[in-house]
Length: 248
Picture 1 (cartoon, rainbow, N blue to C red):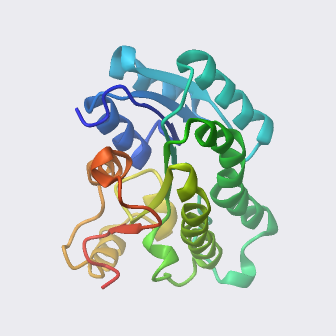
Picture 2: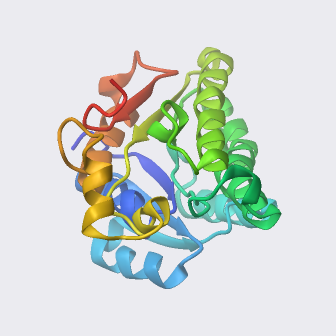
C-alpha cells in the first residue's frame, strides 16, 4: 500500500497504459481520477475500481477543459499529490513530408501542449504545498526513433527534455518530475504505430525488443507506482525505459 492517502490524476486513464497505472495506483491505496476524453470508458473503469476512483471528462489539449478537471479534483479531494500525463496520440506511419498539417497539430496539441496546460493548472498548487510528483509518459521513440513516425518521435523527445527541465526548476519546491519510456505495447495505439496489425508486422516489431515482448499496462503501472511513491524520493529528472532492452 505504497500510495495510501495519496491522490492522483491519470490523463488518458480509461484504457491502455493509463488504465494499467490506474489499476496499480488504486491497488496501492491511492484515490485516482481517471481523466479521459472517452467519458464512457473512464466511468466504466471507475465503477470497476470502486470508491477510490473518480471519472472526469477532459480534452487535455484544451486549457478550459484542463482547468475544469483541476477544479473537480480540488473540490473532490482538496489537494492533488500525483499528476500522470499519460494521454497521447500518434499519426499513422508515413513519410515525414506527407503527414497532414491536421495530424501534426493534433500530435503536438495532445502530446506536448497538454503538459504545459496541466503544469499551469497543478504546479502552483504543488508549490504551495511544497510537495508533489509529476510523471510524464514519453516513449522509446523519443530516444531511438522509428522511421516514418517522425513527428510523433519528436513530440516524445520534447517530453523527455521537458521532464528534465521541469525537474530542475521544481526540485527546490519539493516537486519531483520523472518520465517513463515504454516500447510499443498491447494498447489501442499499437495498430497506429505499426500501420497494420498483422502477425508479420508484430514479429518485425518484436525482433527489435531483446526480451521479446511488448510493454504491458501492468509493466507501466508497476514502474509508475515506484516513481510516484516515497521509495523514489531521491529520483527526479529520470526518463526510465520500460522497453525490454530496445534502447540498448
